[in-house]
Each structure stands twice: as structure tokens, then as C-alpha cells.
Image (cartoon, rainbow, N blue to C red):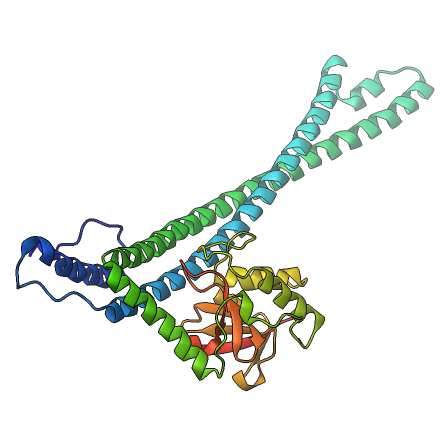
Length: 358
């Protein structure tokens, strides 16, 4: 029973529990060399390890896109909070100036004896002086009323802004909690995949890598091409695209070939899948949202038979992966950790839809 007990880890939900069970089985298999027991479960084959690692990477990518979405919301909340805080500071400054103005008027009244202007005027014996002072008093009264109204107005605005800022701060904390949760999920999935791969012997690792290469070759064959997924598989000249912007997006993506996949990255030194497509189209002057879930709705949906270079192509039922279509059944995409930005056939993954932007 002890060989099947999973070490303490972050609480990642039911799916993580299933991953833990898988790793425990792999651990039990590995323990055979130490225990010399014939009762341990057989070691998983490289093909089984590949299937499990692929599943973990797919789940990590789902969590990555959720992380990206939470980060986008947190960034917006931070920006809104900063704007409210700055506006509250400006309003507070105005409030202080209005209070100073009102204080000046009050001080002047105190110095004049604190008498009502009408009483002071009534005691004046000179008619001309009386009329002159009456006009000045009326203006002073108007200034005082305006100063009081300004104080009230700014005080109300400051209170409202501070209330809105507190609301934004609560929203921000919620988004940051979601960020931490999704980050833990991604790291848990990736650590689980690394643990499985680390348990392979050199011979098993070679067979695993051969299985990965065979899968890519099979997908390439299904797409009717034997191009390798690297920089050399692209034509040397520009790729024909229906618009100038699509050509610019493809040119940018092409220049990123070979750069590493890093979850949550948007360039320029590393990318995740939606980070690459967002950066590519940004280079063409088009602003795309951050996640696969939102990018699929950022343009006009097109069918697979209508695909043209520059279209965004999406994969898996959860719309958790995206690439940039370049024609000939191929795309440029950032696949997963350990696999750099590359060219791959779109048949490599379950196709879920496509969108045309720009």
C-alpha cells in the first residue's frame, strides 16, 4: 500500500487526483528494481507514457489558457484601479483647494468681527460707501456659496471614487486568487509529465521520442506532406496570403520559429500558443484578445475547406490550442513545453474551428 501513496501536493481538483494515481502506478512499477518483487505492476510502455504525457500537456494547456484569461482580467482590474486612484487623488487635491478657499472667506469674516454684512452696511453713514460695500458683500456671498458648493461637489466625488476603487480592489483580489489557482494547476500538470518522462530509461526515452516523431510523421502524411516541422519546411520566399496584414502576421510568426514554448509567454523571446498568434497579428496592426477562447470569436468563422493563410486554427473540444494557418494543410504554432515554435500539419490535433481576422 505504501508504494501507492502519493506525496503531498497542491490541491488541484479531481483531475489532478487522477494524475496522482497514474504517477503512483508508474512509481510502483519503477520500485521493482529496489524491491525485487514480482508483485509490482508492469512498467508502462513508452507508448503508454506518451499517451499519458500528451494528456497532461493538453490539460496543462487548458489551464494555461484559463491562467491567461485570469491574468488579462487582473491586468484590466489593475489598470482600472490605478485610474480610479489617480482620479481620487486629483479630486482630493481639488477638495483641499476648495476647503482652503472657504477657509480664507471664513477667516476674513472673523477678522471683520464676524458681523453679518447687512448689519455692517446698516451702520455705515456714508450712502455712497454703503452702496459700494453692498455690491462687494453680495459678491463675497456669491463666492462663499460657490466655495461651499465646490467643497460639497468634490467631497461627493472623492467618496464615490474611493468606493469604486475599493470595489475594483476586491475584484482584483478575486482575479489574483484565480491566477494562483491556475498557475498551481499548470505547474502540477507539467511536473507530473516531467516525473513520468524522468522515470524512463535511456532506451525507453529513445522509443518514446521515436513514438512522438512517428505521430508527427503520421499527421504529416495525412495532410499530404512530408515536410519537417522546422524552419526549413517553409518556402524560401514570402507565403502567398489573401491580404497584406495576413502576410505580415505570417512573416512575424515565421521569424519566431525555433523559439521556446513557455506557458503564459507573449514574446518576444518565448511564446505559448495564443501568445504567438496574438503577437503575430499585433505585428500586422491587429489587436487580438489574449486567450484561445476569445480569439476564436475575434473574427469571422470559416470552415476548414475555406482556410486561407493567416487564419487562426483551433483545436480540441475545449478550444485550448491555436495556430496560424500558412496554407497547404500546415500551420505555425507553439506546441508545448520542450517543443519550440514550429511548423506542423493541422491534422496533428483534433480540429475545432477557424477564424479569419484582419
